[in-house]
Image (tube, rainbow, N blue to C red):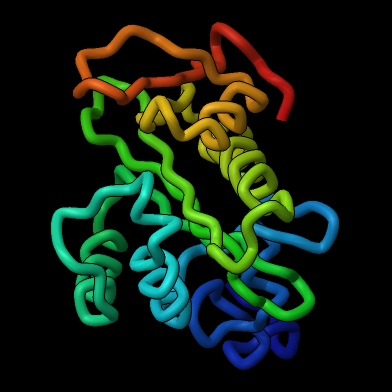
Length: 193
């Protein structure tokens, strides 16, 4: 039952492309003028640029070329996958994307894997830490997930230190040489997000 004149479809914003900018951020964590929001089609050009940048390719591997077309196809598939979440850290005042972060369950019996890629033009400004912290907070508090893991190259010192600062620890895993697995089970360790 509805009350006449209280609301209409014209004043309801659904988060996502085309919705009111501020409404889009209300259900996601934010801090100090930065917020997580769902990765949208308008973010594709930034993701493609970042994922093809030499600084990103040094520590991330992709099965094929990253193009706007392949990323649009990826996003359409990702939106149908209930075992993943893909987000953008943005400046709340401009909606400028600064980093992409997300998680995916590769095995429903395991913890979800997390990833992060910061705009190469924004390295060294704390956006990786902020994006990761907000993602972990969202996963723990809003999604009620049991923990997370990340696989990374051992010589990726910045990522290793980041995950360590956020409460993750190295665990034994059957991985190729030079790679490590770090995880945090929130039932074991509440951490400090």
